Image (cartoon, rainbow, N blue to C red; front, side, top):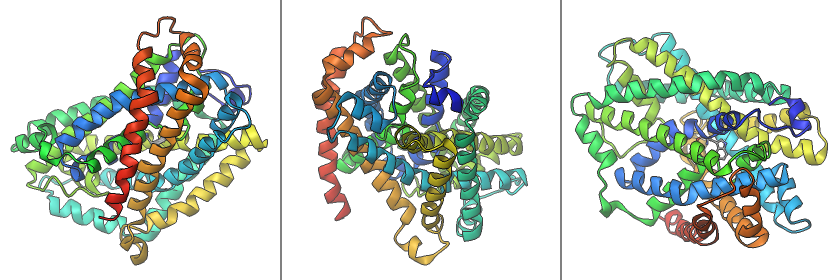
Length: 454
Ligand code: TRP
């Protein structure tokens, strides 16, 4: 969609175009960087199990709710709540989403910057060594991420590019490319997973990843699994409301939400199938994954595959593209608000919010060794927790309560019927939106206090 379509509130060219754009938003660092880290920190397979259940029972229904709000109102998140329930505080949910989006964009861009840095590293042969060890990749990441100037410049490149794409409205071009590039990323990930699964010692990694140890199940695991579901599916801050506002009335919202949820989950699960067997092969512990996990582990698998140089370079290139299609969707939410509601030009909105996010990105960029203060308080990790887990959960809670009790499922369902006259899963959706999701989210929010106080 280009800027003109935006102002005329046009629609996606087809259902497939929507699915590609929404999957582009959903699939990104959340799947390949954040998911394995969460699995590692939260008990392995039991986390994976809770995650998949959370996606099916809560993530998918919330995605359908967001798409329904968006398509019905045909507006940005703030405008959408205001349109459906005028002059009520519900529009605060939209504002919360805008703030959350800017914060997520800030630290996300830092990690996306690392990806571009690793693209350069891999392409220039830094990992072109058959005997590369876990100690070496660890050292390389630690030194790289502690270089303050470099990581800030890389984050600047990501935010600059995102701002440029959003302000020029050249997303149509981007979408054309993602249609080709995302399937290639998918195939590449499968190739890497096959290699990882056949490495000597892989079984131990597979066991950690896929054989649940129920003694590790806890409120913390549920909190992080649910938060990860919202993060990975781009829920809880209005991204899917915005994207939904461009879906045609004749499209089936249920199957659209289903496809996006399915492809997103598949990619995350495959990423884990690469990371854990490779850790086992390299005799590394499974449960100490930090922000550097994938950057330390992927170079190890490249060294174990014929043509590793080629695969490695290609992988980080595609991951950079996947990250940018996600940053675009993060910036789009605040920009569409200022354009629709405050009559700013796209250019002005993109530039101001882009600059603001860049400012916010600096402490995150300095928190992996670049500056002692931000490293000590784990600034990036803290934002990732507060905005990537909690704020998205709160946003999702309000979205459920809005559809379930303010707008009401009966009226919302009328929107779903357009394009899906049967809407067979309506009772299940209604149950999740009204009871299951709100109760689960409130439960985990109560749990945070326990976690924060240790
Ligand atoms: N889902 C994306 C990922 O997994 C990140 C993302 C894009 C996002 N837009 C979002 C997360 C909106 C939460 C909300 O990489």
